[in-house]
Image 1 (cartoon, rainbow over the protein chains, first blue to last red):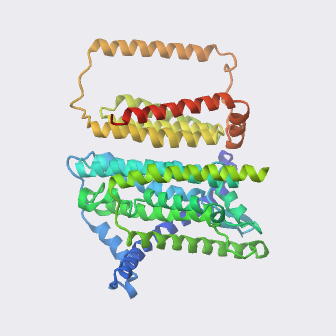
Image 2: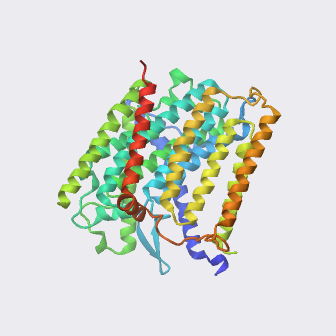
Image 3: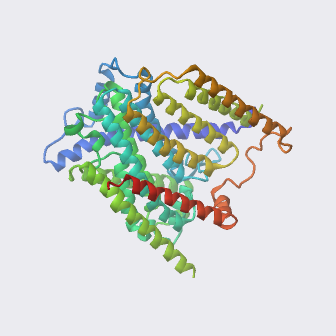
Length: 349
Length: 167
């Protein structure tokens, strides 16, 4: 087992973990589309999808089947390679975020201690930012390659929106990092789990609100869904797309929502921590299972919040969006950062 | 050949191939995308050198932000490969000669450097690239140049705002 001097069992373990996490996030994303339609229905006082299966539970499968069976159209004037690359990049970037999220504490299986995190890297949360900034290319490439002016306009909107809100997001994040003193998400979660420690939301309420707004903008969710504004841009950057390529774009949005919910839960809400419960007194495997359930619960709550906001608030105008980003969120984030720094300095004496 | 060497050579091959594609591509949008691939390969090299912070900042700043702005400009200008003006042959010749001279200078510099001769790059060793050590070095030993360069960036930002402002 020393071929290429790699720990092959570790590789296998990580591969299995990656497969589980990727398929689980895809599965959750599948049912997020369903619950989005259900939540929308409840908020608009109508029954929502209820035909396929009991309570309409098979609806996402039917949707997926429909998307796969549809005819795949690549416009003649489109740039073919990039047209295919666009949705692939959007999806890949959305899924890659899951690598640094600590899904739970470690489990012990077959005498091995397995961390439920794909990679606990030194740069942790910065990796998430790197991947998120790659996600912009999925939209830009797709919009440009379609060779349609509406798609191009939508792609440019999407990219400029993502860049503007990434700044405020980064500034909000710096305040958390100043408190925790580490970039590793695992360490940040462990600090919040320690007995007697509070969740970061207690120290960073403003930072969290800023982060949440920016996350909504990064995921292109209403009220920030300008790249998909039907009444201005027909359909948005994926106008020329059909079949599963369109499905990838729509799906990537939901995966992004799940991942940003997981990041927010880890940064501000203790990750896989259960409040008022000392996990170290439990058996490690049970603690791990409770941890996963706890993180999933937090993610579901965030997802519901995303949907609730989407079906309550109308879309911003483009100048309002830019004004909010540059003239409100960034100054607020800067003030938050300076205040946090001042308090930390004052406490250190 | 161990894992690191395999990674090193495949990343180098990717970097060189993408760099050539940047130059060869007729379509400027394709060139920018290949340039992003070059940044990825170089970030891979940084990670091999255990400079994780540098690697991710390279991706966030160059591949993530600056290249998006490049793409913006190119997409809005709508450059088509057909519409591109043909350059004179002597312009091309001058470019080849000057580029070749630069290459010769670079290669001779690397060959002359005594501390480089007969040594392979140190891989996966050293921890100056980790964010903690890098931050300590930047804010203690190199604090003056660091702060001055940040003032430089600020002035560039202010300049951009002033130019962009209508009357």
